[in-house]
Every structure is written in C-alpha cells, then in structure tokens.
Image 1 (tube, rainbow, N blue to C red):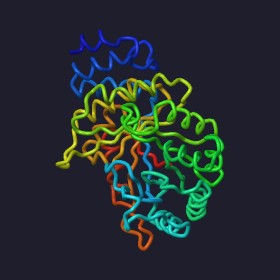
Image 2 (cartoon, rainbow, N blue to C red):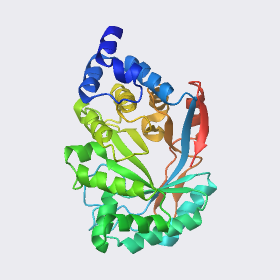
Image 3 (cartoon, rainbow, N blue to C red):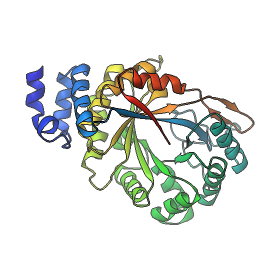
Image 4 (tube, rainbow, N blue to C red):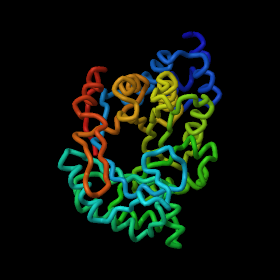
Length: 339
C-alpha cells in the first residue's frame, strides 16, 4: 500500500506540501487506500502546514430566523409556505434567543433558515442588528449564497450592495449551501453564482465557509466534485470547509466515507483553508477520527441548550464543551476556543 500511495502522489504530499491533489489522484486514493492510510497522509499534510498542535472549536447557538421553505425536506427548518406552522421571527424574538444563548456560553451565533421566505433585505438587516445588539461579544455568522441572491433580487440591488448592507447590520460571516447539491445542480443556485457571492463576501471582509454533506450511499465522485471546484477556484480565498456527516433513513452514518472525505478535503484544498467538522453531526467518535484525518476545527459545540419560548427558537444540545475539548486533547492536540 505504501508503494501505491507514494506512486500516486509524491509531489503534493512530500516535495510540495501546499500543492493540492489532482482529482484523478483523489479518486484513486479513495478507491485504493484504507481510511487509516488516507488519515496518515492527511495528518502529515496538516502538520506540514501548521506545525503547532492546535485544534480550534466554536461554541455555537443557532437562531432559526424562519422555518418557511418550499424546497426539499432535508432540514429541520422546512415548512410549507401555506402551513399554519410557519413563522418568521421578529427582531425582539431573535434578540431574545441570542441573549439567552450567550448567557449559556455561546461565542458564535449562527443565523439559519432554509430560505429567506420572501423577507425583504431591510427586514433581514433588522433581525441581524437585533441579534448583534443582544450578543455584542459573539460572532454573528450564517445565511447562505442562496439567501443573499434572493435578498438582492428582491431589493433590486447588486449582490455586493446586499452583502455590504448585511455586513453593516452586523453579519460577520457567510456560510455556504450544501456544495454537493450545488455541484449536482440540485438547487436553483449554480456553482458560478455561489462562487460570485462568496468572492464578493471575502472582498468585503466577511468570513466564508463552504459545507459538504456526506450522506450514506454518496458516490466518491459526488463528494470529490465540490472539493475539486473549491481547489480550482483560485480567486475564492475560502476561509474554511465544513464537513458534515448526515444520517441515513435508519439514523446510521457512513463513517468510512466521512473519514475519506475529511482526509481528501485536507489533501485537495489550498493550504490556507481550514477543514472543520460538525461535532454535532458527526458525534464524538467520528469527530475524533476526523481530527486524525487532517481536520483542525470543531463546530457545533454547545455550552448548554434547550427550547427558547415563545420565540420558536431551538438552541439544540449538540455537545458539551468539555466533551469536545476531550476529543481534541485525547489526540494530543491543544484545544483553543474561537469566536
């Protein structure tokens, strides 16, 4: 196996650590290397890029601005627009949730929702301003390129203008739609539109994160395709890529495919890109394995959690901070909190 791996990728992994893997090499490694072999290669590259043994983690709280969406049924924020169960938060409700989350210890507020649900740009800016005022020491991130395009179109302004208004309202980071779905063409927003929004966000100083969902049964090429798009987008300057392990219908996750995805994210992406893992989505075992596969950041950790009433907000009990820190330190890394 060592001979095969050396033959497949001597330059990216040894002579030029910053050179990302080619797509053909990545596919070959997926098919021929065991998850442990890939983990060793990815961990070596991570240590070449960042010799300091630090893994960061963020203490999150999710504020779901709306559950209204006419799209897929993949997320908890799905509710048909005609349903009586649909809601859009008021600024007071959003601020209430953010304030309570910071009392529980959250250092990052993630604004979520499957779509903008027809909300005008000014209304979303008002929600962000309310959250920022209620949680002045937290990092306010969230929304997606799909949201930005919907808001900009509704307001009749250019994407950079919409992003700047969101930034001035208090938004500090933008999170990507499921890039596997974008690459497959399963969502209205295409790759070039996604890329244009993220590029504009970076130019305005917003942090940017792409998300790749590893679903059971996903083909290797389907998971590698978004990594190849990100690798080849030299003007994107993406901050991080978050790998999420989604459960199947029976609640199980494909751990081996997830490990391969994380390892190849480290091996394929530019050297300055952080590889994050959703601790909440992967669970403690897979999250710890992902750290051995080259990941350097854990997201989805919570200090506390529960329902916030009457704001329809759910700050989920994903993981205690102590558990996440233990997953990091057990592997010999130093756990460092971030916003």
